[in-house]
Image (cartoon, rainbow, N blue to C red; front, side, top):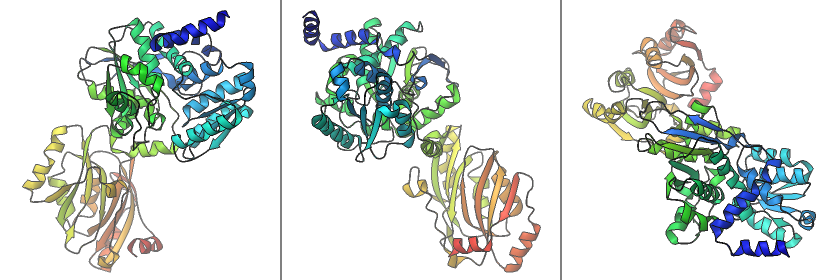
Length: 522
């Protein structure tokens, strides 16, 4: 009877007080499944006075994400009867790993529904943590479809559904992270940036931090295309987003949870939204500072801090790296995206006459002092050329004044920053316009001016540039595929006889075989 009375009293308590009690009780449960995660200082170069940034390293947790806390706290409270019926849940990946960890530790059979697009790294991690106690069910193309399937399983089997965020026990487990922040000795903090998906982590962490540091500013951070909590606060209730950006897949939730919304509307001071490019830049900063490879959702908080860094000067800031479960293939996409470039950039298409030396003349005049990060060109007209350049510079003024230099040089140009065809490298080439083509695989040393020097020294006035495909990769060696067109077969042969296979500024320059050139010009 005493237990029943206590339960009823807790039910009648205000939501935030119930959550605080749940966080206290969670202290006794979660640490049988994992250990506290460290706090680490992050230093941002180039700005003084800079904010004092501390990151909570949830990427170093047992499942490389904070989600273990909530899942383990909830499953530790299952009755013997509930354990016998098993657990069912839906997850995009991180919550699933927490359920798997608890399932194996407690010996509870669990079925985990995941979208078919779930990265393999997360599927494998679920199986690793859960062993024979888990079964993955790949259903649908979205988290919402996985939820529907899991809920149907719950109704049909009587299994216990463990929600990823809209559950007080799960929220209480996530709040132990904030408890560790308070006990770390690095506080109090002036402001905390907290990622929001469904809102379970942001609600519990903000509630706990404000309990001990009432003056702290709590900022909820969402992706621009997945801001479900922002929409809920504006509408006064959780609402469903029509479109959902899934780049930050760990926070791609179409509708904020009812319970998290009830807390966040009181404990979150403001919502900040960040772009995918800003998140990508933050992933790079995390790697370059604390050597952490974060998943996109894990870097959202820092992305907002980087944008606000000037206003945060002199303040003590808390950021949470919420996870590091990223598919290896996604790293390549992130590294090649515009947001990863550690400098300002812009992409321009420039109109030049199709004649020998015209390209070099453009580079010599208007692009002097700029770094060419991407160069795309294919011959499509006998009289006109339209090369596309993505240029970067640590000096913002050089990029701002680039159009003026092009105008002064008499060049017509178009802004193509973010253009789809450039992103997908749709480089067309008309083979019928070529006379005596030669394609070269060039490996050159990545340093300022190396590519220009090669073109100037070996190609100037000898041939027309008919094709160029180069993208900066971050390696010490740059790799480009170059197409040259000569006036005659004799000129082509003469060039080949004079071409050393390696020389100053480049490691190798190898002509493509005839079969490859035939495919290029077909």
